[in-house]
Image (cartoon, rainbow, N blue to C red; front, side, top):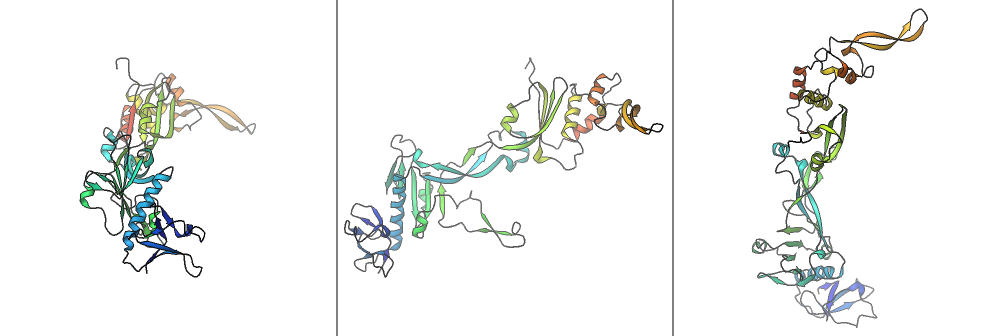
Length: 391
């Protein structure tokens, strides 16, 4: 004889056998969710408590599960403060359509798949079991009584039969939950089966678990979402090397995680040139830093970025440098000035920016600057200059 842990009373309310006691068992009559026939609560200590049919009827367990799941979903929606569901969406940067870098590389850095969580109670306020819409019947129909223009959502329970193709192609948003036991009925409604769902990887080699993997079957129950809006816009932060040249010739250079939108709007105070180099695409064989590239670009465009290294006479120029030397007579270390070739002077011994700006013989090494700029032709960088009054 078929037994179940759940039954409904004369009012259609679901009761679990765990809530039935010898004291309250006579308060209601209990009926089967599968065949509507009367059930009797069995509370014997020698057996697991259950609801039993009065007669050995041909009750269908699939119908029982189907009806139990529908009532559970409806009750959850009606009694819970929130009714959260989660499904996968394609999140893209809103600037992909015009971004030259994205058009060139079609990077995954500028889009991804992500779970989107939605509280359906914020958009829907009515719930109906076996409700109909546009000629289709839903197991559970969610609608908005205040705004009928909002399309309803179908909650579909699949025990042995999935949604028909006709219902799927109707365009109605559908959440289909594959139910195979009572435990799966209470599973969180999170999409785990479909084209957008990333496969769960299971290691097949314990020695190299991150290399040798196979796709794992989604956990039960299978939950599918149909006809939901799958495209969404989001903000993507990327690692940029940022160069800024100030009006007084000062240089600012740092790494920064910013979005493309911030890169276009968040500028340095009093900067006259900014170059943002996307760090993710740096070429390994590039021998020049962004600092060298920024100075070279600025000098080729007649901006104040003089430095001795970019002078045509850098390797032939001799400048006085104060160094420490041992005096052989006194055997004491003393500071003395010596003329040294500029290219042999270590950083910090002289200010090569200040020296270049006061030097009467400074001359731009244009060939060197062009070589530096050309070495970045395969890099992804953005150049910004403040608009002129004419602009």
